[in-house]
Each structure stands twice: as structure tokens, then as C-alpha cells.
Image (cartoon, rainbow, N blue to C red; front, side, top):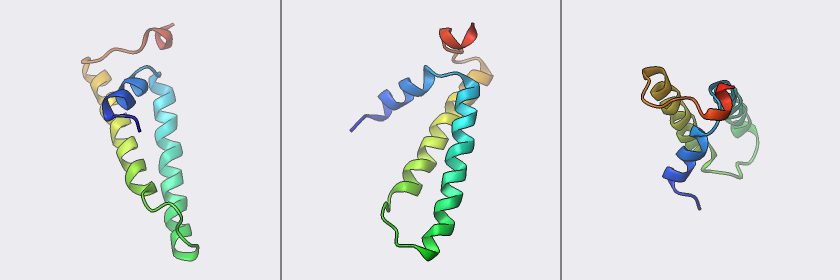
Amino acid sequence: MKTTKSKADEVRKRGSEDLRADIARLNKEVFDRRFKGGTEEKTDRGFLRRTRREVARINTILRERELGRAGEPAAAKE
């Protein structure tokens, strides 16, 4: 299992637009799972919690970039 520090480091290496697309995708998955939860058997009980935390992690990194505390990764600036 990866630590939170390594997950955040991996997210920081990606570009802002890619991160925003991930947020949209994760929010859609959460929405879909909540509707399915009422009709189908739940198989992954920790999905919502993990997904909310991942979205929060991405939002934190995007906010750091907005405030200038962390720059864009070198590959994304080109």
C-alpha cells in the first residue's frame, strides 16, 4: 500500500488540466456508485471514502499551484 506522501508526489508530477479531468471523472464515478448502491449489491465498501480523499488531495495540489506555493511540473509547462 502506498503512503499518502507518495500518492501526493505522483499527483504533483501531473499537469493541472489532467488533474481537473480526473476530478470530473472521479465525481462522476461517485455519482454513479451512489445510484447503483440502492439497487445493486455493494462490493467495494471503501470506494466512496477513498475517492473523496483522492479528490481532496487533487484539489489541495491545484490550490497550492494557484497560490504559487508549488509550480507546474516541468513536463506540463512545455
